[in-house]
Image (cartoon, rainbow, N blue to C red; front, side, top):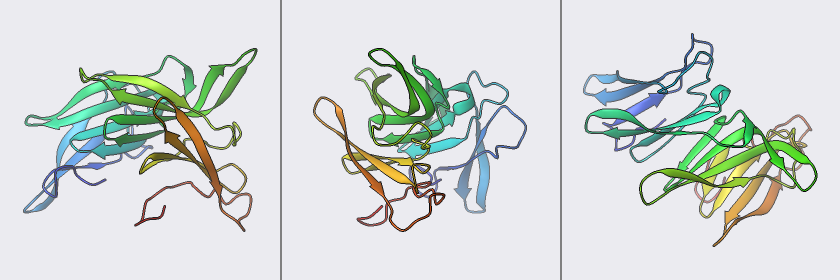
Length: 219
């Protein structure tokens, strides 16, 4: 994961999932002698098996860390005195795997879940979802939207990977047929599901969309 603030800033290494819990993220700084460990981050209420470090993303001086086994995402900030925890994000919805994927994009923070239960008119809907948080004027983060797809099923692996692309949020659903990527667009008052993209000539087990990366004008 690149270091914010340039080459000399802190870097991050994802914690190996099979090491003893609770999860930790190790920070490395690059000096004249190479890379050296400079920080050790953990959740303020970290627990055994919380999955802290399963997903990471950085923007500017912020780092967000997913802990999906604890249904939590942690936001850290790098300042003059080093790293400090700025926020602990959860959701009021009944969820599983909140924090399996995370994404920071300016004043928006996206957190993916493996399943989120939503109450419909006379039934409940359980599917993967993306919870959208926005930074408020006072600096706190508030949940403003929950994104689900009407095109892919509950077992599609929806929200296993996320990518912000211009004015769209791209959400992976690698278990939908041969794999799919669902595009959402933020409007003036609400989000809209814009398109579901699939690859042709792939087998049903291809899982296209497992990882997302922008390259020039393509994804």
